[in-house]
Image (cartoon, rainbow, N blue to C red):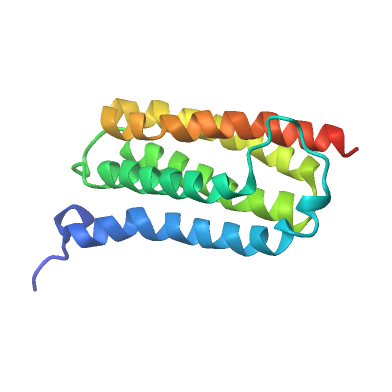
Length: 166
């Protein structure tokens, strides 16, 4: 009987799927919650002067999701015996779950407050992921820095939308 192959011995396509599919699902779940609420509910909210135009969010998030897929793929292709690999992957997928949940909290539930409650720990998890990725692969960690910067901006934006619409 032949021994089963470990994930590290499987084809690179499997690892690419482990990197890209959860990120793509997060993107789709976010759009499902967001898009039906842009023209109605979101359009009616008071927004701060620094609120970007709606068209900017799609391209920015597409680039951020691509960089997230690239970053986590770089971690997946590391040998399995790398110390801290599992912890880094757990942090990454936790921040990804918070990312998906934010769209549902803010847009689907029409609650800037719930969005704010979500986005602060999400940002903390992103920073922790960057730290843990850096221990394993600098390029992977640097690939998440734009996400951290954008989510920091999103915290300020989310807070102001909440404050302006109390």
